[in-house]
Amino acid sequence: MKTIVIREPGGPEVLTCQDLPTPQPPAEEVLIKVAAAGVNRPDVLQRMGLYPPPPGASNIPGLEVAGKIVGLGEGVSQWRVGDAVTALTAGGGYAEYAVAHEGSCMRVPKGLSMTEAACIPETFMTVWHNVFERGALKAGESFLVHGGSSGIGSTAIQLAAHFGARVFATAGTDEKCAYCETLGAERAINYKTQAFAEEIKNLTSKRGVDVILDMVGGAYIQDDIACAAEDGRIVQIAFLKGARVQLDLMPLMLKRLTLTGSTLRPRKREFKARIAKELQQKVWPLLESGAVRIVIDKTFPLEKAADAHRRMESNAHMGKIVLEVS
Ligand SMILES: NC(=O)c1ccc[n+]([C@@H]2O[C@H](COP(=O)([O-])OP(=O)(O)OC[C@H]3O[C@@H](n4cnc5c(N)ncnc54)[C@H](OP(=O)(O)O)[C@@H]3O)[C@@H](O)[C@H]2O)c1
Image 1 (cartoon, rainbow, N blue to C red):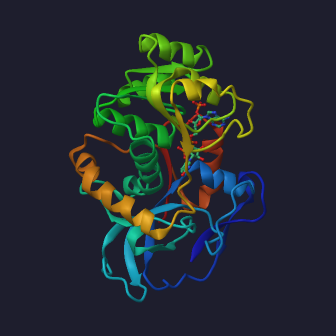
Image 2: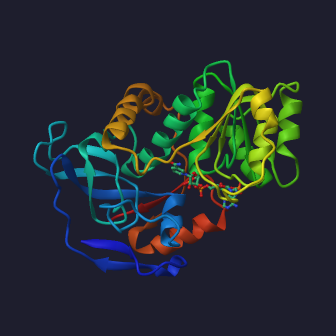
């Protein structure tokens, strides 16, 4: 099968097309003929050598795919050959065929294309767990997401708004801010021209926000602490501006804040299966009615994975970048 491999750690040019044997699905896993694979920032970090795959996972990048099941490992009970699924993979998505645990597969929501479906698993599972479980966002509360125009941000804004939160976002250009507002953010703040913590305090009559989803880290963490409401929850899902910081934690104690975080990839199969089930119950109806939409920035053929990474690293994109397999 045709795959994209990382020749060595480096820039987008190290992504190389290579023929490799088609994997056989181990017990409880399915073999998927990939129609489309989502591109995520962690793939870029993996390519740079900064995010190695967990032990036992494929070295081929790609954390999510959509396609048809063409093979079943021993003991698979939930799926049949021919089923159309979108799946979280442990890696290996940038390929004509990929394997996934049966519990990490979800049926393709009605009315969505394979390209749209390929954008769901990594992003929606991450947002669901970190915003609604770890962050425990509830209707009537307020929410701030950084990187609002990212794949993760676009999903977080829509789901938080849909489930009744007051939503704010930050992004790096006025165009990205306007995009966040079309998705349901009451106000998006251009962090290059405005201090977001001050702005959030102004927008919330000094109260602050209940939940913050932060992928930036660095100096943002102190500002998150400053603009979190009493009993607020700050959830770290990445540290694009660094994980080592000096902090004044006094407000953490005074406002009874929770500073937490998580990463999806190394979590157990049972955990991923639980999230997949909940998404199908609670979010699939929203995708199928069009209340929540998949926003695709650009698609690339699989062979042009390097260009897809260049697009992501340009930071010009809004929404998801997808590889299509012909
Ligand atoms: N913990 C987990 O389980 C998990 C799972 C999936 C993804 N993630 C993380 O979530 C983040 C978003 O993922 P994604 O796939 O949606 O990526 P993406 O679309 O590329 O988004 C990254 C966003 O971060 C913003 N940004 C702010 N500071 C940045 C900096 N110093 N360098 C680069 N970008 C910066 C960029 O927009 P601006 O122009 O607004 O700055 C961009 O919109 C990534 O950091 C990824 O690693 C975590």
